[in-house]
Amino acid sequence: MRHLLMTTALGMSLIGCTTLPSAITENDAVTQATAMRSAITAQQEPVVQSISLYEAMARALKYNLDHRVSMMELDLSKADHDVSRYDMLPKVVANGGYYGRNNDAGASSLSLLSGRQSLEPSTSTERNVWTSDLSASWNILDFGLSKIRSEQLADDAMIYEERRRKAVIQIMEDVHRAYWRAVSSETLNNRLSALEGDVKQAFSESRTLYASRRTAPMPALSYQRELNDIQGQAQRMSRDLKLAKMELAALMGLAPDQKFTLQMPSRKTNPARLSMNYSDMIDVALRQRPEVRETIYARRIGEKEMKKAVLEALPSLEGFAGLDMSSNDFLYNQNWADYGARASWNLLKVFTVKKRKRKAKSRALLEEQKAMAAAMAVMTQVGVSRARYESLMEEYLTAEVGAEVQSNILGQVEALSKASSASRQTLVRERMNAIISEARRDAAHAEMQEASAHIYTAMGYDPYGVDIRGDEDVTTIAKSLETLWTTRSRMAAK
Image (tube, rainbow, N blue to C red):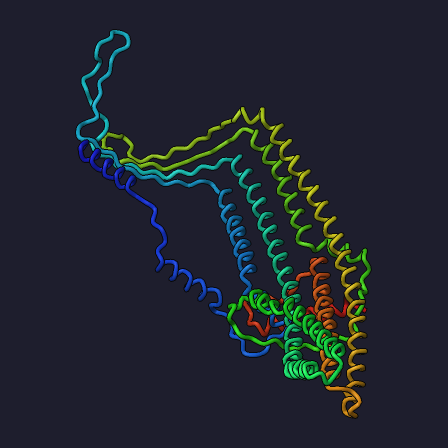
C-alpha cells in the first residue's frame, strides 16, 4: 500500500510538472474572429427602411454593445447581492467519511500510581468504520456582519444601475450627434454630386478661355481660384461629416459594412428658446444625474463600514446542534445528537477598533467631498450646456439668414442667366456658394440638435420612459421614444 501511494503521488507530480501553456493556433484565431463577427449582429432586426432619429435611438438602446456590457455588470452585481442574503442563514453542514487500517487499533493503560500495566491490550474501534453527521450552527456576530455586507452590496448594485443610466444617457446623446451630422453629410454630398458635372465643365471652359487668350488672364484665374476655394470648403465640411454615418452604425450595433439610408427629417426654421430657468435646471440635475446619485449610495456604503468596525470588536456567540452516526459496533450508542454553544472574542480587534472607525470615517468624508465635487461639476455642465445651446441657436439663425440671402442671390443670377445677362460660370459659382451656405446652416443645425440633447444629458433625464423594458421590437421602442422626446421638447421650450 505504501509503495502504491508513493508511486501515485510521484506520477501526479510528474504530470503537474510537465503541463505547459499552449499558444492560440491560427485556426483558433480565425474561428474566434468569425464567431465574434457573427455574435455582434446576431438576433438583430434587419434594416428594412430608412432609419429615423428615433429608430436609431431605439436600435442603440437595444443593440449597443457598451449598453449590453453595463447591463451585464448590473446583473452581476444583483447576483452578488442575491447570493449575499444566504450568508445570513444558519450554516448546515453534512459530512461523511470512511476510516480503515490493516490491523486493530488496540491500546493498553498504565497506572499512574503503581506504574504497572493496568489492563491487557484492547480495542474499541473496528478496522473499517463509516461515519456521518449533520450539523447546524448560527453565529450571531456573523449574522450581523452578513446583513451589513448584504446592504452594502445592494447599494453597490444601485451604483451599477446609475452607471448603466449614465451609459444609456451618453449613448443617446452620441446618437443625436452622429445622426444629425450624418444627415448633414448626406445632404451636402447629394448637392455636390448634382453639381459636380457643371463645376467640372465650368473649370474646363475657364481654362480653355485662359489658354486661348480669348479673355483677360486675371478674371479667368480669379474665377478658377474662387471656385477652387469654394470646392475646398465643401470638401473640408464633407470630410468632417462623412465619418458620422459609420459612428452611427457602431452606436446602433450594426456591422461596419452594413448598408442603410437615413430618413431626411424636416429642418426646424425657428428653434425654440429654453423655458426653464437656470436655478430650476440645477435642481433637476442634482436630483437626477447618475453621478450625484452614485455618490449617495457610496456614502451609505461608507456609513455601514463604520457599523462593521464596531460589530467586529464585539464577542461572537455561536449555537450549534447536530446528528451523528457511526458504523463502529464497539460503540454503545451508534447514533446520537449533540448540541451546545460557544463564545469567542478577538481581543486584538478591540485595540484596533478606533483605527478602523477612523478609516471608515475618512472614507465617509472622502465620499462626501466626491459628492460635492460631482455636484459642482453637474452645476457647471448645466450652465455650459445652456450657454452653448443659446449660442449655437444664434449661430444657426445667422447661418439661416446667410443661406436665405445666398438663395436670393442665386435666384437673381439664374434670372439674369436666362436673360443672357450673366455667364454660366457665374451661375455655377453662385450655385456652389449656395451649397456652402446651406451646408453651414445644416452643420449649425446639427450642432444645435446635439447641444439640445446635451442639455438632457446634463440634467440627467432618462432617455426612455418607464413603459420600455428593452425587449420590445425596434418599432415599439422608437414610437415610445418619439412620444417622450417630443413631449419633453415642448415642455422645455417656449
